[in-house]
Image (cartoon, protein in one colour):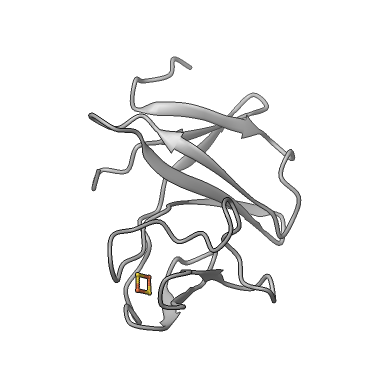
Length: 119
Ligand code: FES
């Protein structure tokens, strides 16, 4: 299948182990937008790296997005916790809001991310 300009290959199937995250850049207008993959028990999800409290990136160490338990995406600025599979904030200032999901699809052994409609 042909790839649209609003999609990008972000890896291959199985190249991200459970509990790991990896950042990538989405091809958005002007500046690219930072996003990340997270493997939750074998299922890979992708989110825009943007807190729903203040629109800034969430890493507490460059590329480190899960908290010490490995169970939640954590925002370094005020400690919001997000479920890595649903994107819902379950603790912190943006509680009840959701991260912006990056749609993923598989083509052959490639994992392809699409720019979300919100961006
Ligand atoms: S900026 Fe993320 S919790 Fe405040």
